[in-house]
Length: 281
Image (cartoon, rainbow, N blue to C red; front, side, top):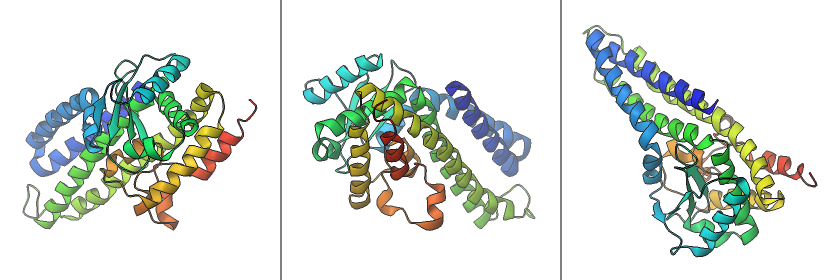
């Protein structure tokens, strides 16, 4: 099912690029952009995890760099029935975490420097178990490809916007309205795709993470703490990669009202409520 989602995302990106290429260059433009799409799809599948780590400015670490963290992950991944993932630390002071990689054997769990400082051991276990749950359910490939795709769409939207401003198109009489619409609709569509993927996956990973640890309270407490810190401590990260994190790392920039409809994360209140329902199970 997860691979089917990846295929659908890649097919959507290919179709978008071909349409854009056809608009600017006719049949030759469509062929050129199809080739570009094929290269981008290849890169997203094989290198999207590295791209996401760069977005977070994360560095890979070994057991000697953070022995307590390494031992905790090793213990929890055995309970989850997973191979040991690669570990990484992002320099942000905002406490947060995410998982990336294209398979169980190529998985990476990344935590921020702030997470190591601002949560207790029980909460850290809950966060790590949540990220291992993403790996267990193969969420990270879909989410990572979606994040990379959203970044590509943002670039395409910028091209379309400038094309409209400069009167692009292969005809002098080309109406720029289509380009303007594309520059608005394409990023919106990318956000909706990310939202649908992330919300479903987060609920599933919360439940499985609680099962890995053996109780839901550590993760529930961590979610509340991380959400509060995310509103106070900003994080500099490409918005395309924000949906990978356990809580929205751009919460300090998030507005209320209508903008909540397009949040890539379910509300912390709902996630905590669902975790509390797991007590005693």
